[in-house]
Structure formats: C-alpha cells, structure tokens
Image (cartoon, rainbow, N blue to C red; front, side):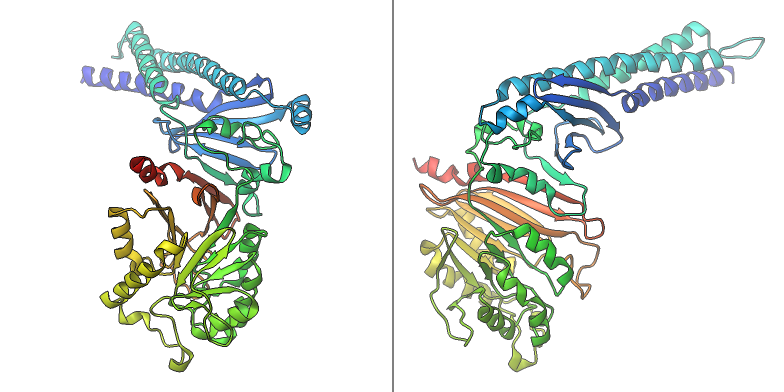
Length: 491
C-alpha cells in the first residue's frame, strides 16, 4: 500500500512536470527583428502539426505541414519596414535568400529560448508537486530528492520530444492559404497582388511583403506564376443564387468554366435565376449537367455564354457551331451529361436510370475525335470520363491535356504525365434543394497556366469557403513538374 501511494505520488510529479513543460509552449512567444520587418513567433499546442505563417494586416496566412508534434508553430508578420516598402515600390530588389536565412535564424533562436523556459517551467512545477507529496510525519511518500529527480527527468524527456518533433522537417511546400474575413477569397487576392502591382520580389513575393510565407517555398524551383493567364473552374450551383456574388468576386474578369449543374431541373424559371452567369466570366464556358436541361443551355447560349456539347458549340436556336473553341489561348471542347434533362420529357430526372457502359463508350469515341485538337476537355460527370482517364494515365497523351469536371461536390486534383484532372467541388454548397448529405463548403478552383512554348498548366489553387462565416482557404498545388514528366522521358 505504501509503495502504491509513492508510485501515485511520483505519477503526479511526472504529470505536473509535463504540464508545466507543455503549458510553457502556449505561454512563451517572442518578437524577432528581420531586415524587412518584425515577426512574432509562438506555439499553439493540441492542433494538427503545422507551420502557420500569418499576416494580420491583410488577414492572410499560409499553413505548411512538416511539424510532427500536435502543435502549430505560429509566425506572424507584425510590422514591415517602411524603407524596404519604398525600395520595393521603386523596383529595387530585396535579397530573398538573406531574408529567408534571417527568418530561419529567428525561428531557431525562439525555439532555443522556448525549450529552455519549458524545461525550467516543468522542473519548477514538478518540483513544487514533489514537495507537496513528499513523505513527512509518518505519512508515506517519496523522498524530496527522488521527487525532484523525477520532475527533472520528466521535464528533460518532454523537452527532448518537443525539440525532436516541433521544428519543421523536410521540404516546406504545398501550403494551404487561408483568410478569416467576410469577403472571399482574400488569400488569392494576396497571392495575385503581384499581377496588379507589377512588382516582383524573387518573382513570387507578395507586393506588400506579406510573402514571408512564400520565402520558404523555394520559389526558384518552379517557373514564376506572376503575370500568367488563369481561369476559374466551378460547378454544381444547384440554384443557390446567394453564392453567385461569391463566384463573381472570385472570377473578376477571368475566363469562367462551369462544369454543369447550374440548376435543379433546368426549368425556364430556374434558367431566369441563373442566366447572369453568362456574363460573369470573360467569357463563360458551360457544359450541361444532369440537373440542367436543353432549355437552360439554349437560354445561356442566347445570353452570350459559350455552351459546349459533344456536337459542337450550341447556338440559341438549337443548332451547333464549331466543336473546338479558343478561350484564353487554350482550345476547349465540352461534353453534355448523358442525363441532361429535356423539356419534351417535362424535365424528368433521367439520372436515376443509371450510367451505362454505352454512355462511357460514347464518350470514349468522342474523345478520340477531339483529343489531338484540344488542350481542355470539360465534362460534368467524372464517371463518364473514368475509362478514358484510366487509359490516358496508362498511356499518356503526347501533349498536356486538362480534364475539368464536377458532379461529386468534392474537390479533386490528380496530375499525371501530360494529364491533369481537376474538380472544383460545389460552388453552391449543395444548393437550395439540400442535395448534399452533410454541410458542404463552397468550392472552386483557379488554374494558372502558360501558353508558350506550348500550353501547360502550372498550378491549381483549390479554394474552399465556409458559407456561414465567409472564411476562406486556398491550397496551391504546383502541377507542372508532374505534367512535364512525359516530355522529359521522351527526351
């Protein structure tokens, strides 16, 4: 019984030492001065491990993996040096490597101080508990010396674990960009400010020097994205007209590709609600989904949208024009959903009949007629294209090909040699018809690409917006390396 009490007392000492050590992680922060401004570094325990870089001034941040401890290493840009901003405005370069090295040294200095203070906090709190549970006046308990030794040992072990798992390891890349404000998406606004300012810091730094997050991404390993053409991919609005202003702000003069399901049934009333999308992109490209109709597509074509079908570009009178259209320097072809609703059938839901092998084979034959003439294929239902995509992954096309789709309400991206498939999710968050089984964020994708020497997708920003708070995040994925793999292999 005495030994059990002593063991429990020592466990309390260990718990106190660990609590003191971990508690110090949340309480200790510090500011560090860089040549371009001031950063504040801190740790938030009990989160998914990440390096979190945030700029409160513009409500923009980037979150990287690589931290194996369940904690976030937070770096906030607290101030920016005015002289540096003036130099940037005059077009004078900033030594990016120097700033990156300064930031790394500042974070390392903070971590050394944090570990030292955490060790002290653990020893002190564990020591106090050791004194409280020590044996005295006939009451059984561990000796003070034993308790203090256990407190010190537990603190040292805990600090060693933190020192091993907290510092980011490996290449810091593929961040998730996020913002908390009510307007969407500030994260992408920050990323694309270079295009508006015309000023480049190492071709990747944000014009307001909020690009501290970008300093650690090794921008020299990829071609620069500033000034490159872009397009927006969205789908599955499902009559949620409240999301249209969000999509309009995200598009802002870019080409918009809408991969189906603007409505629920495609009736004339629904068409009148969503026809404004025809003028939202510069221009807007649409393919029909299983919740759209022939009536809707003709309405959109008459309103000025580029409506693509497997028979060619749809005209307002129901006739068809060219199979391939050029937008933003890229050649597009599109394919109607096999279950597109029809006015002559009272907009009946044809999707319940199930996808047939014949529908997949029809798509396969159609792709064979256009593949060599296009850069982008737009189709609503990924399952329709599944067989073709499997074939193309097994036997890559001779030049880069993008396949843009929707329907699943889930964002998806897969880059293979000379083949990129992108699904932006649902811009309607399931729509007004409660089509989603659970709460779904609004989603879209922004694709950055090059045109010369040959068209090639460079990066995809996968954007997610909370429809309640408006908070947004954007994860940038560089895809050019995977797509170029075939070209290198063929030498």
